[in-house]
Image (cartoon, rainbow, N blue to C red):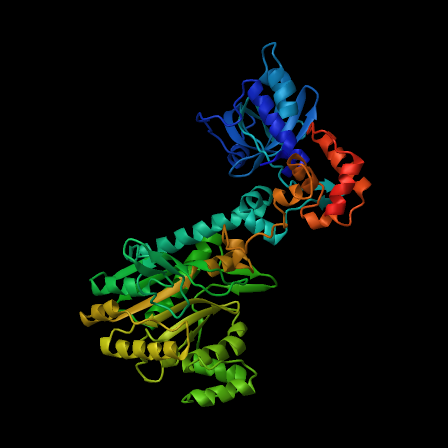
Length: 573
């Protein structure tokens, strides 16, 4: 990287890096640094009568240098703590360079250091660490966007979502609440595992690369395996593999599955996401409803200490049991139309009357799904099971025991969004084949989300699968609910982003072609003229002053061009 591409702060920090090495201090040491205490624990366990020795490490987040004594705020993995540093304590011998030069001049906010010392309470009453030694552990070459306070107003806050999601590593450092979201995310996963494991069900792994993208209606990502010379798909769901394991004799299996769908992105959708899917033999969707509501209540209490969660102005209560509403009753309630028994043309007429857009590739199932999504879904704020879906919407689901036009399926709606989906699983191989063939007809009609026919899964069913209930729950959306977030990007450490926009910059050859020496190209681009055409309307005298000033400021030691030479460059541009 040419040093002209760096900010003034970055250049200074690189100079400090070199000076540290000249002093014999390695800014990135290889040796282990022993840590035996953390900021929050030190405060929680403080004893006025004990001079507790500690060894801590972390980033410098602020500092107040006051001659021979200074205070810094050190941030470790658990929080922040004040450290008191004096020249004579960390430099007990005659050589005071570690304090006078290294600490005061060469260290910056964001640098990692190690401190050994003892815990005490300052005259202001703040529990702190009195440093007895200081070790440089890592030099930060880019300045952190540290928030500054003036007259009670905060400046330089790192709040732009685009930057926060792209530079999550910075977001985690400077925004205190962000790390807590991801700690809770892990706690949610752990609590769910605890609940399921109590039943004795087995956590398993299934393939991410699949020859057929089965288990859901979604558009897949496609890749190619060179050695086998075949196309493979990133999984859209793991359902069909887990059900193969039920065929194989396991009573209950589950997996936290990373799934991928080549579809749109918004505040509740990311191309890759995490789902927990579970399948249990000899159960039905009614049992699974009770299992799900009990599990969610358990997780809420375990992670939050309460079943109640704030989402903006709303309070959502995860206390079981949850309300149950049939899909057809829901559509009737919120649209006024009873769609039971309607064919595809009649459903299209309903959509016209409701101003819902549908296209020719959609079959009955997708049209009904569109009506529900547009007019009903958003009304369910408190946890509500929507049950008994039309058969066209559920090609992997068992027909309803009381109505063959419906299926034994539920989706759990919370805060206007689907959180989980569950079935009494279809285990009739002949019925399953017919449903797959109907999906094939939809695919031929142009529906690029219709399911593929998985011949091996059909073969597995022909060996016999016991009555089974399965459920999949979106872990990202569940985390959003339990942490009070409204965007999925807030609960993904590294959400998918569009490519960063970069300023267009001409190659050096274009500048050379109009007579500009190659060594002056970076200087001209640093001045803001990143394309040759930008020089066409520039005042030559202004350009001459700008580039000569940069040459001096950054100590380039180039021979300055004459005003006439610069004038020729501008004329040729």
